[in-house]
Image 1 (spheres, one colour):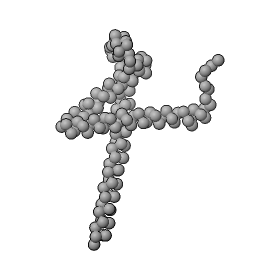
Image 2: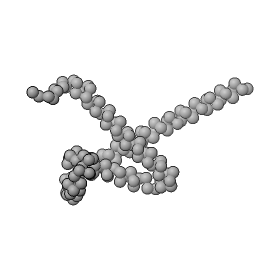
Image 3: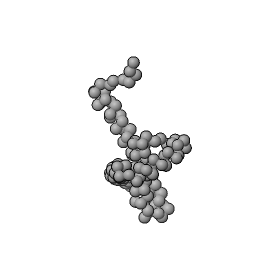
Image 4: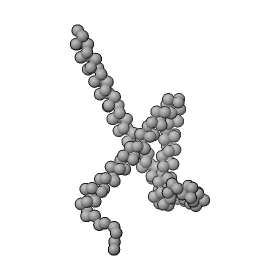
Length: 148
């Protein structure tokens, strides 16, 4: 007996696909916020000139990790359980053209999506700060009018 469920096209289109897209969006926003907070920390430590370099290194490492997980089917526990296989396969694939192309396209995709998400996130944060400032000004002016 087949234990897989056959979902109708409508269930897939209207329920499951949007759910996965939402989870992917939430996960990528968490990635974006993590790097934004890291950049803020680096600015406070007077390392602001290295933010772009560190962001690009993180994107490159994520691209390698995505390749290892999606194409070579490694998991995080393989670092402990199969370190020799993990290292040898990674070094093999880092010197081959096909895998490098996949990692390069993944890097470009992650970088572009990150900078778009960062722009939107910072714009929303700026808009929130702007509205808070306007509210505090209106509260201050109404308080001063009440005192007069």
